[in-house]
Image (cartoon, rainbow, N blue to C red; front, top):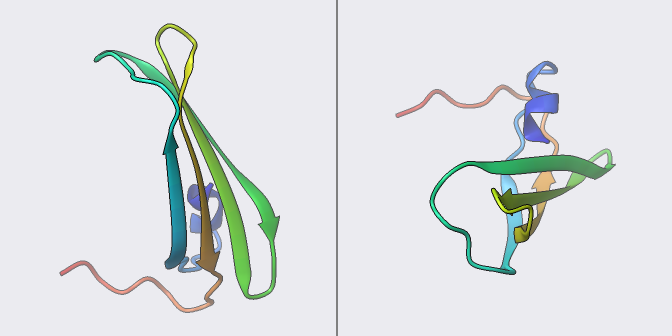
Length: 76
């Protein structure tokens, strides 16, 4: 989800995140999906899901980020 904002050079610091571990997942391949639920002027609501190789939902996460026009600070 946040990668979609990378092209706009916006910085999205996370102010809240919730992860629900729905089921155990074995080591191996997995499939992830992320979406921007609601982009606002100041807040951006995000959602992500992760499925195991067996197709079962393993993790569901939501987050809230602040939409900022400034560039991301350099890595330390």
